[in-house]
Amino acid sequence: MNYEKYYEPLVAVNSSDFNRCFYCGCEANHTDYIPPISFIHHWRDANSEAEFIAVPSCNECFDLLKKKNNGTLQTRFDVLKALLAEKYKKAITVYNMWSPEELKEMDKAFQISLSAGINLGKETVSRLKFNGFDYEIGGSITRVGKAPDKLYQVFDQTFENFKLALEYASSTYQIKKGRLSELYFESGESFDKAIEAFHRSVEARRLLDAIEKPCEAFAKQYNQNRNLVIREVKKYLRADENLTVQEALDKFYALRVKE
Image 1 (cartoon, rainbow, N blue to C red):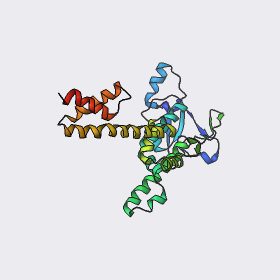
Image 2 (cartoon, rainbow, N blue to C red):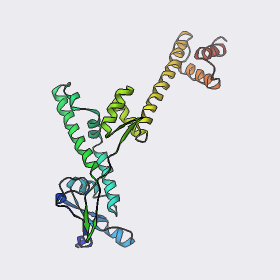
Image 3 (spheres, one colour):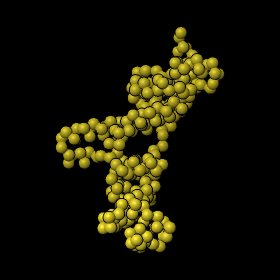
Image 4 (cartoon, rainbow, N blue to C red):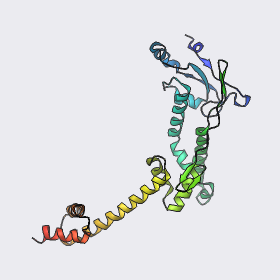
């Protein structure tokens, strides 16, 4: 059955956007149907709200969306961006972490490999930023403004893109870019929270070392179980915040060893 007849075509208003994928800006060589034709009975039978439009799409966006059952253009647009970001996550990370200047210091094979990742990441970031174009559906024109550039804040400093913010934060606060990038997304996409989380983890590690190393030396000296000593000393310290590690070890000695 010719289900395509139920769909209104989304047509670019400006000639510069003809044959362009509405989702990412690449060359359009396919049509994405909203909702997908494979789900058309679900939407018609349920009498659910759906736009029934045919959208110019590139092959990749079409393939990413073909199994997604979305009924509106905005929802489908957002889903595509998330799928694209996930598919090229590694390339985006490489693009954000390395600069052409840094590549010059590496051997040729590594340069080629990283350069490919950087280029792919750069292209993907551009596709993710693409906000669609002015279009007409059934005689009604919709204007699509350029998406506002996202600004990235590192405490009192502002940057126009993630890459610059990451390089500044990594250099200023002495955190490896890979680790900082992970913490940024784990911290709700906030550099401030990511930096604070890193320093909290460093402090926690320092405090742990301050406890574990004396406990290990104590356990070895008095032939005690290392994990038992550490566990009991931590318990003593939690019970009395004014207690030092050495005082906690003295307590363990008095209660567990001296006898």
